[in-house]
Amino acid sequence: MFAQGFQTANIFSGQDMLIVLLLAVFLFGGKKIPDVMKGMGEGIRNFKDAIRPDEPAPPPPAVKTEETRKEEARKEEEIRK
Image (cartoon, helix red, strand yellow):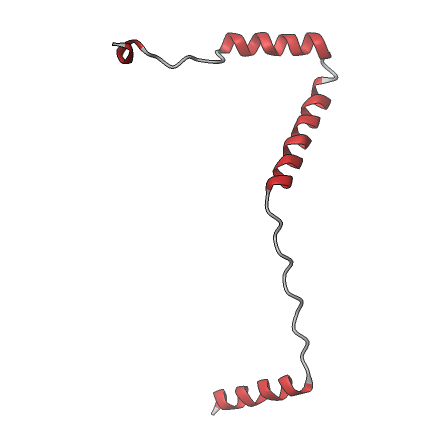
């Protein structure tokens, strides 16, 4: 009975968004809105960075010793044969 008449509600229609935009301009002024949006963007970015797991640091590059250089040279000679 209820399933046939149930519809999802449009939370924000075009008129609602326009009214919210006009209220924001009225309350904050035209010059203040970019600063408010920038602050919101930085807050969202900081939040995403905080919940993202830390990536492990890459391992340091291997230091070549005289022994490893000799081993690499020997392997290259075997490949060339």
